[in-house]
Image (cartoon, rainbow, N blue to C red; front, side):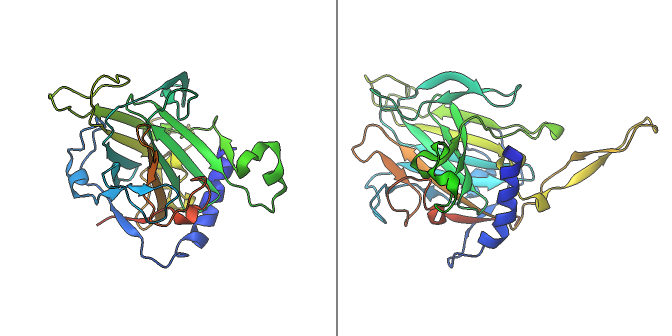
Length: 302
């Protein structure tokens, strides 16, 4: 199922790109390796433009008086990288105690809603242009991580009125972002807790102190995100045994010039206005609806 949905992204992307009048913001390619450690100390992070996710959910164009989430994006031939900083004063992170993902790269999920607790979560909605198909990923201060493939059926589709599409959305929680196993390129995540006023690291699930938030990184393989197939490059594999059939392995992805939409969202359970995001025009309601309001970017090699 996953590959059929990926194909839908690639086919629709060309038609969707350019539909918006505003110029997309650039995401610049990094020229040095990114170490996934939560430090954001590589040159690419220092040069990347800061995206502020301070817009209050349901109040179009209104921003919080204090910072909520600052995000940076960069990329290379194999990955999209996301680096961000939160400013939460009481970090709450709850795990699902269940692991999902590729067999040799399992990760514990994070709880995003709870009956009694108010978990803090950062979310990213990532689309190559089709507003009906995209990834929703979550990360928290304990470095717990979710990836959910989302489908928003058109109201004219019969499946939109089925039990599979409650709220008009399909949440394919058993799908996950594939690693690029042929070249050992894997999804990776990291979190570093920011220091408190006393110089000690912020704490998770401790209401007795004042935290300052955390810094985190995500490394997401282009293969697993569903990059358009015309960006795929295959390289020959030379075998010593001349009797063996020729084989090939997936090489770098040709991503320069590709458009991508990313909505950054932060849940801060301490606040009355819990949700903030990075879109100046996104109205209230489900973040999954109205993907045309997700900020629009283009991948630049220069």
